[in-house]
Length: 562
Image 1 (tube, rainbow, N blue to C red):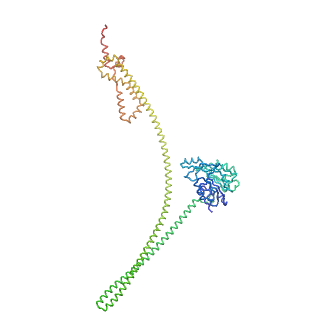
Image 2 (cartoon, helix red, strand yellow):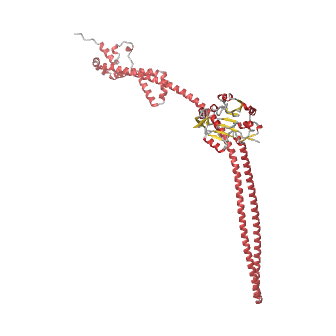
């Protein structure tokens, strides 16, 4: 008999190979999850076994209560000590609930929502003492990384399940973690039998004869089928039965349509017969009229024949009445046949409507099948698109990383340039401040000259060329400023920094250019004697006209001393 497997990795196939000969066996399932989907014990329950299902999630526990009335269903978690623990459930994935906070953190890192709940905890020793009364033929433990804690609360020397099946990889991973708990098993009289890529199988030493059955993976000789495949076959058979019923209904509808057509043909034939009879009666009436005409002629010919004619007329009247009665009966028959034709047409319309409905049902079935194929194609397209978009997103991330690095380098360069520009601006400010200080000093000296007695004495001489003197004073006042501006403009580094900045503001640039040009204008020519050092130091600050006046005065003879 073909074995129906429900487990996700063929665990029940291996266990059935080793223990299927036992009638009414007993199992304990820690982390039972769902009573059907990926269940290791469902096939054994269907074969008459019973056992204990430990599942802390309320929704799955209710399903066990409804679908496993022979089993003992406990809404608890198993652990190393009595108490409570926090269970981390992933609602989006069946079977990922775990008491391990590290496992929950990994699920969150992968983008899954994790729900926390507090559940009671009991040791397997306590569960065994309370509910087990005989042999336990296999114990399965699947608690998403919490297997070591479960085994620490279980005395394998005192309680001896024949076979142990323990999940031996990290949740949703091929990485094994059995080294954390395997010593608790093998040091208590259990032999390793098989690793199926997900679970490790162990056999109690007193049942070593079962080892041979657990050393080969599930294969064709185990004669098993997945319950998903069986379900699909049942659905296909039901669909074929429905299609056969639809075909039979279609055939019945066609037969009814043909019967309606036959009834319609019979009604048409009856109608044609009635029409022929009516035409015959009409001919008789015409003959009667002709006879009346003839009798009228005979009446005119003689009274004797008149009586006979009246008698004949009466006879003909009866004949006409009979013909009318027959004609009325024919009309009634025609009306009856019309009703029959209408009924036949109604039945024909109903048959055609039923045929149309059945055709629509067949088309709907084909449409749903086409929609399913289209959905599969769409999902394939979405998968390909998602892969393409993921690759594009990764390339875009690499481009953005490069752009970010370039932006950071440009930002650092601009910061350095800004710092250099700021330094040059500070230098310019210091130079201008020094020029202003020198200007103030010159102004102070000029004020002292204006307040001196010599200045007052030479006032008439100054009036000779006042415009030239004022120009000389302005030039002396701004000389230091011009020197400062000239040095700054001659600084090549400063020009490379400032000129591009001024180019952004045309009005400001024009004002700065005009100011620099005005400040760089050449000062008045100094006489050759001043350049050669022949002018006395106390006269060098006077305009040329003043120095010439002093020179003329010095050439005049002095008056004799009295």
